[in-house]
Image (tube, rainbow, N blue to C red):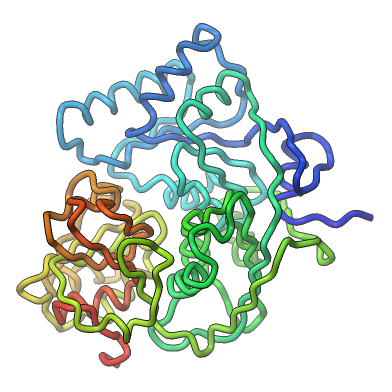
Length: 417
């Protein structure tokens, strides 16, 4: 009997036959989703193919999240075009302000375990939080899939990441993925799948899983998947969703394996200008900041808002720093209001922004000027990522961000205990 990884199993189901790593296969995705920045190009190319007659029969969703509210005429017209696209293909259009696509579609149960998912955004890998195989594709490839109903894939080799131990105080899954990036580099998982396992001692919440899977693309991974737990399956059962349990076989063959005991892990920080330029927070303490940004497709969760409020409660953001907080979805925002988290953040001097990818992608609502330095719990810090090419972005977990906002410089949250 042949054993399979999660990537092999999901692509086997979608291809309609048994497949193995290294093979090239044709497969039809269960879900395709696009957003308001890259979506217009998809629309234009799609209309040129088959005279706009497509053969894709799966679910198609369009989310307005990258520039919300629209900052100029062009971004407003992009949204109009996406609405038209949704009408022509009978797709679901999610209006702006509802949430950042990768988080929102998991929250609503649209992304499900075991699915093959294509997205017009590299962070589609976030779908792996629930055990789906999310693959980011270019706009023209998305258009071709809509027109043809399928696309070709190379079945990736899989790297197994075995996590064990217990979280130290002020350490989260963001520190885990940063630590891994620091060890394997931005090319360490090129065109491979990263499959996360954890022992019984390390209970990964859904928010933890979003954070882990989201940054696998920063290592070059084709997909990053967390093996679903009973908690994940209960999440869907509570919504009345029937999902397929696709799990790796115990004797599956892996390209490589990483073992990480998190017990002694310290808060991690990625220095400019790469997410793999990672050190312990102690090595960058004292660097002065102009902006701290909390909130994105992986770390704008309720857990992140709780972490920020835990540190900021009763304190004040430094007079030199602007602190921007972005709940990843409207529902997360509402829950944070109900828990009193938003009041704690606002009282400390934070500005709460609507759910948008704006500042994270250097588009609007938090763009950096020449010479400015930011600390962010987002996923990329390449030159010019959040604004001027002469600005600098450091990446960390939310605890480090919140402590640093108070001090006005990169700080160790363990000193706030």
